[in-house]
Length: 196
Figure 1 (cartoon, helix red, strand yellow):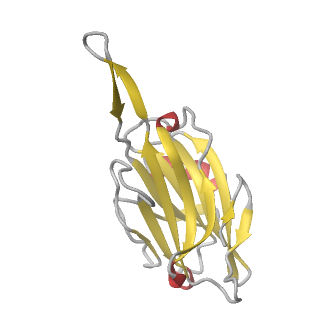
Figure 2: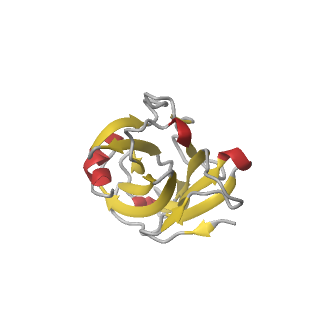
């Protein structure tokens, strides 16, 4: 059973039948907006704009970013977090970019994994439709555990989507939805650190 989350809402990442999750996947999906453009001779036509959104994971511990997983560095230094590859357009159904986290393998120095999305091509979120982030149990046939609609289309070019945080022996998932500006993950580090 999936939980639809609101901004700032948390959910404990534990298996429904008991025990802790071992492998989760964060999926990011979006569609580009179809815009109407005026033609050369006064007519109009509908044009779909390709927008390059990027999902990244910032591994945080001790109040600083320890590692970043993104399209240019697909695996964390400890091997526990892996980006599955870059989608340049948002074309296709379902998850357009994914980041897989092997929770037991995450270095003990990592307290939070913050997931961010940014418009690498520089367009703002008013030009993106149907954006969402979700967390699924990869060890259980991609059973969806939680979903967060990335609403609030506006002039921002980046968003802190969500975080996974250590809580005792387990992990919690928190939907954040904090808007910001930036075209690459490094520019979002202050925003991510302010969200933990």
